[in-house]
Length: 574
Image (tube, rainbow, N blue to C red; front, side, top):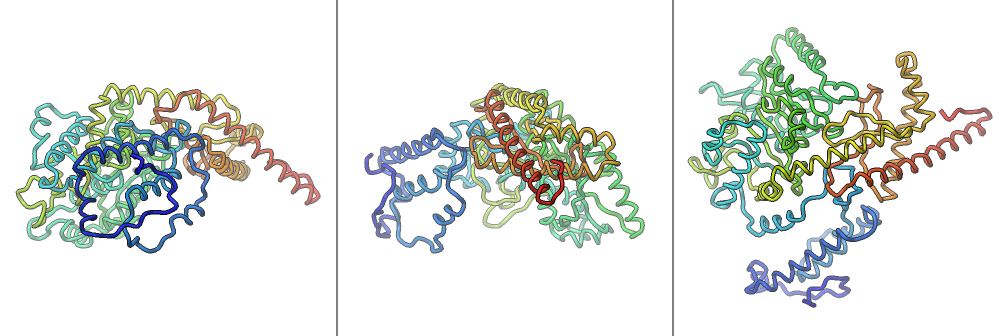
């Protein structure tokens, strides 16, 4: 065991690259003792990282990390595993972000159950390739079973439907993907295939003949996807890949404060597009309407029922991006907020978000199991015609056995266990909202639904003046804008101070859809899903941020006063 102790190795042993040595690295040791020995030290490294006192981020600067990781040549001679592990411990683990810290409430990445580490070891050890049954036997069936569970969670079809299709190799109830971006790309690829289908021998479909030919054949001037301004940037990325470009994604304004798509503005965009179509003489093909179940920045949910109705009315594919909110369907109250999701043609979810799996794994579900055939493809050396390979229906080729982690987690925790986790997240959300609303130095800027709170620090005297000015917003527009610019600067500085202090963490974004719309307002963003976080910790976080904000405001006032004196006249703190 002594030989594997990890530390700072001043002199690393030189290893000769021989065939015998290389072969040893690819064969499991004859005795499990040696393997267990490494495993114990690896787990000790991880345990030490979690138990280490100090801030959320290490004190090392990016410039210092650049000096560590600036080698430009590929290593030539082999190194001992223990030496490489020592380097990982000292240079990587030591300087990683403690996302499981209960005071880390700024991003969707959070604590995961400790057994995920073991599941990851199993998945890596097996090294199954989910593209083909020949390289993923039992794991392919695990994946299909998990997809069946997720499909039932969203669409709740009949027992007979799921019994017939849980292991039906002729269709796919959905795809496991690398992440939400690929899930959204998969959904919109399917939507494009439905928008421009094959028409006998005259047109073989958009996937074969391309978008330019598809538009020409069907007589359309352009293809469009409709999504709210709170839509994830992956929708635009999908647009660039699918050939409609970012301009082919129309962003619909949202209701101020609610951050949900404005259906009346959606209709205006559709009608405006149709008026231009008449002038040009060719119609626009609306490929898809995308609803959001848990916006990334604000955690709000579009009116999915209404979006389903609009989609049906204009004859387009309805996709719901539930990458953030999908897992919360396990809770009855959250399911009610997402009413209409079951009407979506496709739904994307992320296992690494509210299913608490490690990064990263996405899911794209198909309401109609036959739609999966619109993604069908084969190759001579793999996923051949007549095979039962999952890869026939996926955009991606080689894929790891990622579904093992959420599949096992649903067994370990059960629906009841997840419900307790979400109930805790709901309690934390209510606590934080209550603290913000009762504190005269903070302002709540969204109506939280799925565990994301937007707020900002506002000095009492500025808030009082803002409230007065907002009684007549048109007349006082310039003053309102000027005050908000000052408050924006203050909150940017507050966020930097929070990062430097490093005892807690919230993120920051800029929203045009607050009560001060259309002005872009800098907000702090707290996410209350970390199971390790307790209500009293949120109180400590907000108290800390208040103290920082007060100091920043006092410094700003001092600067303004000094400027006024130097200019020879008094300057208001406003």
